[in-house]
Image (cartoon, rainbow, N blue to C red; front, side, top):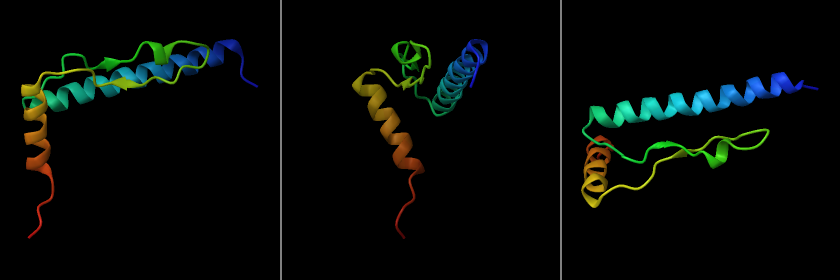
Length: 80
């Protein structure tokens, strides 16, 4: 059985991992010219004794959605 300190440490590790995932996703999107203004870690999912952090992609403009779509379509495998 884990101690309270171990549970807090594990919870902190999960939140830090989510923050790192957000940072990597933000950088990757920026490298292809896409910015999701609301991208972040969902604070509600980090609440409680055993948080399960979720990445919130948030809301974006139609222009941003179309730029993201264009990048995804450019990277998708094409049928020959």
